[in-house]
Amino acid sequence: MMDKKENGQFSVDKLTRKRLSPIVFSAILGAVLVLTLTWAVAQSPSQAQVQPPDFTLSYKTGPQYAKPGDTVTYTIVVENNGGAIQNVLLSDTLPAGITLVPDSCAYFDGIWWPCGPLDDLWNGRKNFAPGDRITTTFAATVSASANTLHYPLVNRAYIDWDSGQHEMAHTTFIMHAIPVFSLFYEPAPNNAEKGQIITYTIVAVNSGDSVTQAVLSDTLPTGVDFVPGSCTYDVGPNPPPGSVNLPCNDLTPGERSPVWQADMPHGARITTTFRVTVTIPQGSALWPLQNCAYLGWDIVREQACETVLANHIRRIYLPLVMRNWVWWYAYDVYEPNDTPAQAYGPLTSDEVYEAYIWNAADVDDYYYIEPSTSNTVTVDLWHIPEGADYDLYVYYYDGESYRQVAYSNETGNQPEQVRFTPEPNRRYFIRVYSDIDLGGGYDNETPYRLRARYE
Image 1 (cartoon, one colour):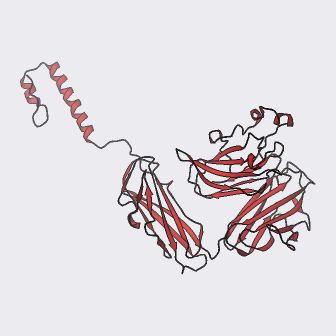
Image 2 (cartoon, one colour; image 1 turned 90 degrees about the vertical axis):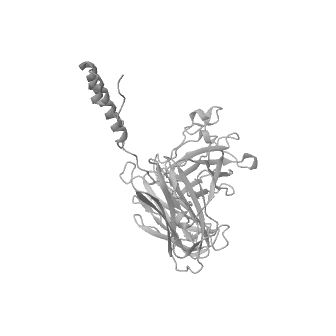
Image 3 (cartoon, one colour; image 1 turned 180 degrees about the vertical axis):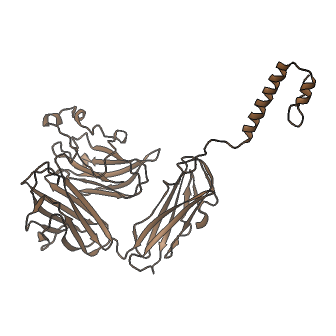
């Protein structure tokens, strides 16, 4: 019988003393060598490359502007898109001029938990598998004495682990007043040729704090001539006597020109119109004719651009007989899009889409976008048919239900606009809705226009 081992090894001496045949002895030596190599490899570090963690898609959000005394909310989303990692710490350094609201901090890792102190928000270090995410939110109060205009509050958060760190920062500017500007820009017609007159309409709205001496400016493209004296504006809503057809400045193509300067109290709505004549032929290198307007007060800015080009707008080209046919949707590149599951998309950022609320059964049109950053998303709905009233909604799906993010329901066929801060790489559903029972109406001859601006 073969001796088994001495100190964990087969004894070659004892094997040889058994006077085994050379063939058997060689086989035993080979087996011993294989076992030894296998044991050595098992005891050595793995040669496979370990994937490092990746927290680069983590981000921090907060308000762009705040006033002294305001309470602001910050959200930190930590997401690991790399390999597994242990002992991850989240901390935050509130800047001077802002204080944490007691008991306002909580984090979500599947369950909501109260936070620890700022230097250890998760009450200890966390382990992250690939794809794991933790969302942390807290409120802070801006000091009433932080009265230096534009004083920037730079709030930094840090993700720390054994071999690295990732910083996330958000800057908030301190203002004494915070206007919320919206711009709606529409050329008519959308497609033009040499010698044709284009009428531009710009609607400027302030839904925030009242401000004085807001400025509207415009950059006409080269390739057009401004029609002298054609620029006027109405100050509303419901313009009082003396605030209709006010003259504004003539514009110079190729330059940024001031259009008007005016006070904009909360709820102000100023409508500006002017005309240009196209001076270049189709096919010229100067096409498309892009015109941009800018509304500003202090450091607050809003921009809107429109392009006149033969095929700029994605349209549904249908003859009238097709539009009234029971199977019209078979010829519609967007339809059927009556539910989120049928949503058309993703919409191209800054592209203008034309579509229809066709009949009383077609009250919902759904589209979707998938922003890759947390930069503000702006969705505009305009060119709503006369006599119709379409509303605008944005949702996302949380796995169980559709959560409303933003909405706009202006009266009548007034333009609708929503703005929101997205979570990167989340799908957002845009809903154009007509409540037929409440007079929302429909029109299979006049399309609405929809545009989403996002990154």
